[in-house]
Image 1 (cartoon, rainbow, N blue to C red):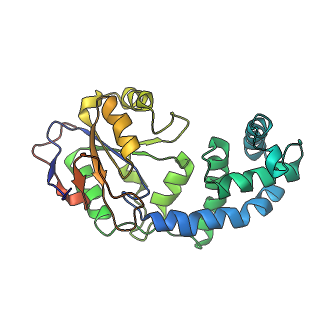
Image 2: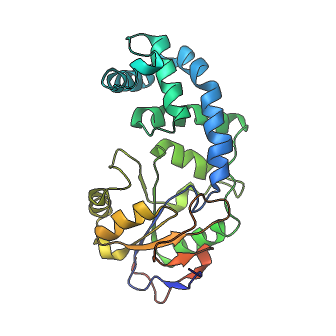
Length: 250
């Protein structure tokens, strides 16, 4: 389907995916994930005694203990080395375990702080976000990466710190991105009706779930995205294709 000019008339809240929507998939797949994978064991060895990290490891251990696949990879015993092996295996399988996502965020924090990591956004993103924010739209993020990781990414972009443009942040602790209930929860937390929210994502399954909850949805078709078929949803290739047809109530 060809890209369209999508109207945001009657829309007061804009909910954005990150990967494949505002940031290239390649940055996540080729930079962030390998960085976390490479530093996971060393980071956990240095910080496992800290309360926050320890709590995440306990949550991950409960997941390992109940995962029938753990024995198949030789991680079926309760020990720190086997838990590390299990977490590394989850990363290799791109399994989205919530405590692992939280740990990845902590590892990325160190990379951003050192300057080794900096997030490249699509070149139209900074201007679009600034324009929408000035117009009064409430901007929010919903990503499978942790809220901490989201804030780090937008706080360390090639266009500077854009984190202040967003008022709400949501991750998988809100609920699965492919479940309609998650979007109802988001609408409630943002204090608005689902019909006043537009959700932009490169995932058809996520759009289907959001649409089922009553949100307006738009498919993001960006270079390098693994899926380019919109399944009939409105398509944009650049954020400026969204038009503000009226002043947005503040």
